[in-house]
Image (cartoon, rainbow, N blue to C red; front, side, top):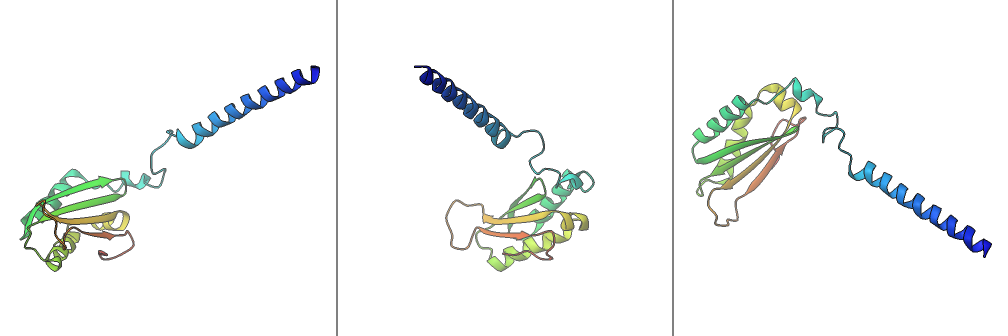
Length: 146
């Protein structure tokens, strides 16, 4: 009977230790909210900022291009996504040329420090075999990869 009491306390101790370890593990792995999402990799953004006026100028430039219906620019950390809506009769080559011409509107420090993503789609809801197309430009690359 005395051995059973000792085993009971030992089992209880291990169960409590296991629960404490599980709570500690969950806190460190899953509830880590003491810092920014990207860590300190994006601290340079304070010095090199893609401003709202630059976004507006880029969107206005894209909207002024032939065949473009609408344009939108969204920034997420060190990634800038440019969404371009074109008319349904625009070819892939023309759409790619529009996106590539927009690179001239980005300042040089933005091109060297940010990743750019381009999504070109038609504004209509009908599915086409041509659109949407997706392209991206890395910080180190010179052109958009489709």
